[in-house]
Amino acid sequence: MVPRYARPAMTAIWEPEARYRIWFEIEAHATQKLGELGVVPESGPKALWDWWATGPAIDVAAIDAKEAILKHDVIAFLDWVAEQVGPEARFMHQGMTSSDVLDTTLAVQLARASDILLEDLDALLAAIKRRAEEHKYTPTIGRSHGIHAEPTTFGLKLAQAYAEFDRCKTRLVAARAEIATCAISGAVGTFANIDPSVEEYVAEKLGLTPEPVSTQVIPRDRHAMFFATLGVIASSIERLAVEVRHLQRTEVLEAEEYFSPGQKGSSAMPHKRNPVLTENLTGLARMVRSATVPAMENVALWHERDISHSSVERFIGPDATITLDFALARLTGVIDKLVIYPERMQKNLDRMGGLVHSQRVLLALTQAGITRDNAYRLVQRNAMKVWESDGQLSLLDLLKQDPEVTAALSTEELEDKFNLDYHFKQVDRVFDRVFG
Image 1 (cartoon, helix red, strand yellow):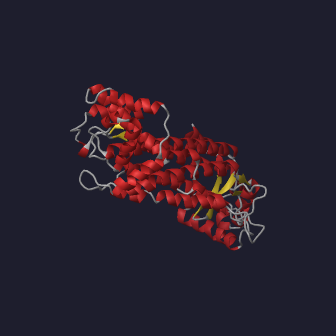
Image 2: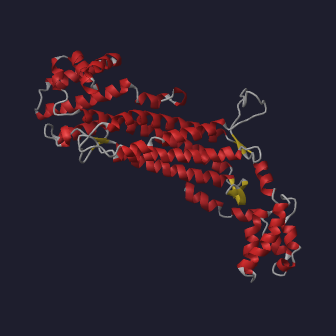
Image 3: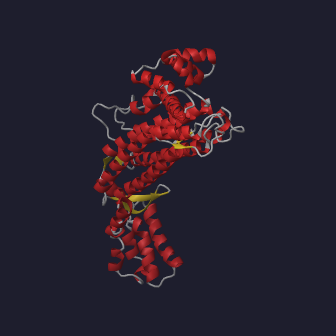
């Protein structure tokens, strides 16, 4: 985790003290149920909860010092709690194994991280929707392969982004449900030394669902799906960030990141206004996606368990969620303050002498009885003259002077095919599909 790209609420989930607090809750809830089952005396869970009610500080340094000697983090924690609680602490961890604590804790952390990310997505969706409505009918050029294609609206561009992030939210809701599982099943997951009702009780208390069958660890296909989902969200962030970066290029300049008073774009060139936020988002997206491959490689553990996944998850759990949280918030800010230039969009639309209307002429010629191949040839030979003139010539003017074209289409019919509004007649329908 890099502090520069971290926000407090998400970071707090992964702090050592927060992790140890979840560990205690798992152990105490399990002991509580064992007491109800008569496996341990009721004095055991009572002593744990009485100590917890005092609001104790977790001495991370002391636990770490024990781990340095014991070489086992869970045992170090249990020993430290026993020192605080007294003899009754011996009833903790009855029939449990370390993975019961570690895997269930990770599930809690990832579920809580998901809740923050879902809030982030809601904020982003709200910002995109507001700007899409604002520019619902703002004409702009659509590009394929980076080349002028046909007219669209800036609102439609943003509606596409909204639909994409709405899908991201749906996927994250599903990934959260899949990752939020609890395993309190003991060594190799057989429940030999602990009743399954303990797992069910702990799961209910922590807002999780019991893992149907664990093998001492929660199966890592769940985690692979979760981090893959984060990777897809990161890719969607990059898609929108790259669009802004392209639109901010000097030759395009249809939109740009907000440039605040006093901001400087370059140490050497005072005129520069660079898309630094969206370039940063592109980099952050790469870092989030970097978690997906090791998460998938973690699926193949030896037999019932090994710990080859453990070190990986200590990195990717905090890093991916903290980075994605920051990236979503940053993108929301970019969209919320994005400076949009409708006049420049119109200027770019008009730049190539009406070439953007070529398909309408092609279709009209075919409907007038000309074969598609010949219609294509007629439009293309005029369009190439406009292209080679860098838009100085007018496609409409050239078509009016082409006898093969005018033999099929009247001047009025040609002019009608250059009506910009024609391209926007379905905008309302698309918006209804996206926004309901």
